[in-house]
Image 1 (cartoon, protein in one colour):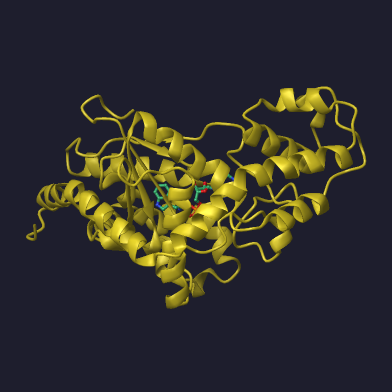
Image 2: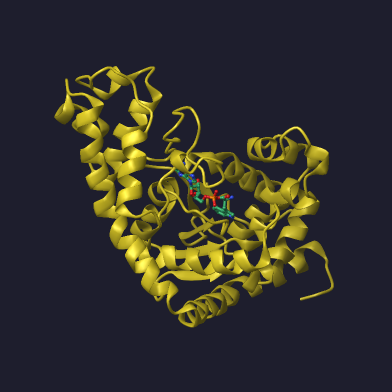
Length: 338
Ligand code: TYM
């Protein structure tokens, strides 16, 4: 548990690797906006993480601004939350190096995201891809963050962050770093692909039909939901009755998350009806939620200089918290620099 001496502080991050999805929105962005009301919050555009796989430099710069626009359009207030790019605060890379020396290589090989991304040719992936979770631990612990809202797929990385904090504290005989709690809550912590209900909806899926992008227009959203894979059975009376029907469960969960209802309430409202009835209602709901976000993103993207200004102001605030934490870490470790 994060000790009482650490004031509650929320940190989370998203990679600027293009194509933000409904999964990112429901599993992360929307919840970030909710948490900003009750907590001190830092939200980061993790561009150093993005380059663990090849990124075209011009596209990366644009994706960073687009992600900043998505954060703001989803309700993050850059006055209230600290919104910034990871590479603008040197402490992330500084602390990551220390954690590279604390974490064990074996821990990294066990990460399922590494296994998925590296595939069969792990020896040929970047060293950064393997060390990715140590940088993620640095992101969080650089601010002594106590709570990290994420989707289900990041749980293993947060557990590793806890392991790194514990090993650092143990090795150096200190209690300097908090043991952070993941916050994985709600009905949409794992939004699945529209083409395959056993696979996560992902910005890197080769099929654009598998996901709803935050920038999709109303027609694209409606078409993707209409073509989403389902089965021929009608909706049952209860959500539990959807066992063994992953695609159907996924669409019901998405509906529930967007409508602010429980999955059981959604199933009860459509009980006995076919998916051909359900899908248009889901499409209307998705369009009603996402259209204002993509419209706002478009407006914000029309003024890139203003986005850069907001990010620079956020980086300054983040740096003010991070700098003394790096200095104290270096002192604990016996490093000469401050
Ligand atoms: P990333 O960029 O892949 O995803 C950003 C956030 O979106 C969530 N998410 C989903 N939630 C529900 N259903 C989905 N299909 C779905 N797809 C993505 C992710 O769980 C995540 O919360 N390693 C992180 C970024 C990161 C980070 C951090 C997060 C770097 N440092 C420190 C928290 C704290 C990542 O690649 O997320």
